[in-house]
Image (tube, rainbow, N blue to C red; front, side, top):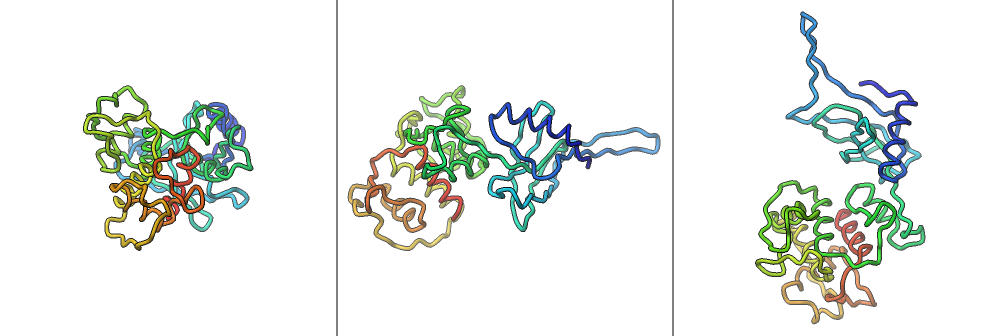
Length: 286
C-alpha cells in the first residue's frame, strides 16, 4: 500500500477533473495497492484480479460533504471508475476485485442550468456524485425537460445497481442504442414493461403514473413482503389508470411522490428530469 506523492496525486486528479469537468477533492491520500508473490528463487508474480473481493476502508475528511464522497479507481490517464462505498462513523468502505490506484474522493458536479437556488440542486448534485444521474452535456442538466422512458429506466437500473443483463425483443430498442443495456436489464428484472408486446417507446416522455409504476415495481423487488398502509392518495385519484392506482397509493404512503398542485397528482402529466431525480432520491432514502 503506497501513498502517491502530493505531486503525483495532484497530477492524476487534475487529469480526471479536466476529463470529467467536475470538482474532485481527495479525502486524504491516493494509494497504489499491489500484491506480489516472491518465491525462494526470487521469481515474482503480481496478483491483480481477485475472484473474492477485498474490502478497502478510507477515513473521510470531516471537512468534506460525506454524501458526495465515494471510493474510485483512478487509471493512469485520469479515467475514473466509480466503486461507491458505504459510509459510517467517518469511514467509507467498499469491495474491490482488482488492485491499482484508489482514493476516497468528494465528487461535486455543477451544472450551469441548475443554480444554487434551484429546488432540486442538492438532490441532483448528490445523485450525480453517486453516478445515478448524468447531464445532457458536460455542462447542462436540463432539469425542466421532460424525461423519457429510456432515461428513467436507466436511472432505476443505476440506483438499484442492477447488472444482470437480459435481451430486449422490442422492435424500437436496438443493441446500438445507448439505453439498450439498461432497458434489457430492467425488463429481465420485471421493473419495466413495454407500451405493447413489441414496442417500448424509449424516446416517449414518461407520464407520472408510468414513472411511479416503475418505481414501485423496483420497491417490490427489494421488499417483497412489505405491508402497505391504505391511504387516499390524491384528490384526482379517479383520473389515475386502473393498472396504476395501487402503485400510486403505495408510493404516496411511502412518501416517494407528492402532488403538483395542492393534492393533485396529475397522472397523465409528464415528469421532468428534476422531478425524476427527486423521486429516485426519495426512493433511495426510504
